[in-house]
Length: 418
Image (cartoon, rainbow, N blue to C red; front, side, top):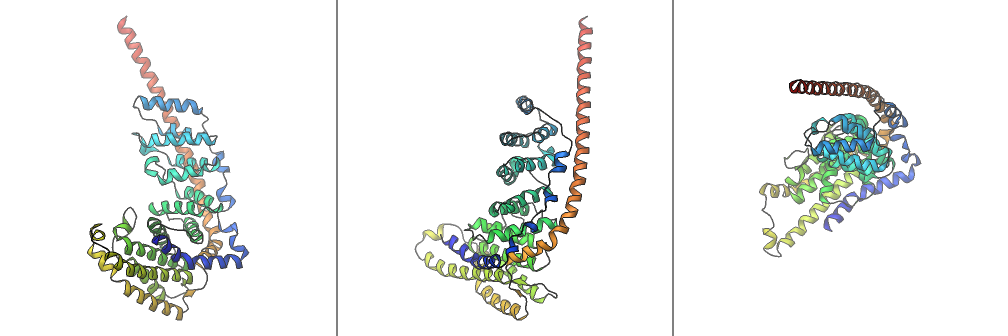
């Protein structure tokens, strides 16, 4: 209960500002700052070379192959995914993707199979399956390329499912796949829109949100990027103060070095010292202020709780370095106030909300970011088709060779019996 109240308080200022912007600007919800129809068009994918197959026969082949403890080829699982034609067949494909991942050939799941799997899930209303296999990637082997990630992320954003969109962003963060500018824009948009829904967050959700904001923000050297870094470090700092540093970096591509709140203040210092038009959004600064206030309140109440009895002391061993970091909280609060006043006097506090800033950046930059993505995708499709033709030809040659060897063995056996 305490955690949910704190999370609601942390996000209150961000949400209020976002709602005001939405009310004042009808164009704020325009879909242009999402991916264009040209980007999401399925025509090129649909027109790529197909190898028509009977799924029942393929399923029977794979079952018999696994029963004999033989590996199923990457072409076989690819053909199954390629020939999905209904929602029910998506469920079947999920089962065989799992089986393939746990077979000796698991490393050979083709990139085009992963792409086609996500495309098929989107086509047949099984987006939940795409997200499930993505979040359980070690069980299914689903590691999409950037373009495929964008398609799934954009689909959730357009439907207003920002929580699921942020789940996709979390996977991007875990795989450190924020290389494309288009992916960065879509991810920051999803994060900003999710914050505007005033979510009730658990500690683990705050950690994922903070890490996503931080790592994606590091890719943008502008007001949006620095604002994301500030809030990301602050949320991670909150988790660090409440649960210790090991709760922060475990399973995340984050530094294990203590002091995330200190790094949030360092972002403010860099913006203060920077030349040019880099600023920090006011609602992000308000969020950090709320984080510090809530942590201060939690610190005061924790002293009373510890006096209740011996059992609270036995729950877990106290990490002295974590306790030393907690002792820095009053300094962080004081330093934050100083830096906030300094930024305000320098004119480096942007009155626009974080969500509005992301929307503006998307409107200005997403169209140009799409062009190289589409060109690269077209080239990738051609390369996939060439690789697929090569594998089909090799498979054909291997079958012919096996048949020839079988005939020779039979002939030799017949000659010996004669």
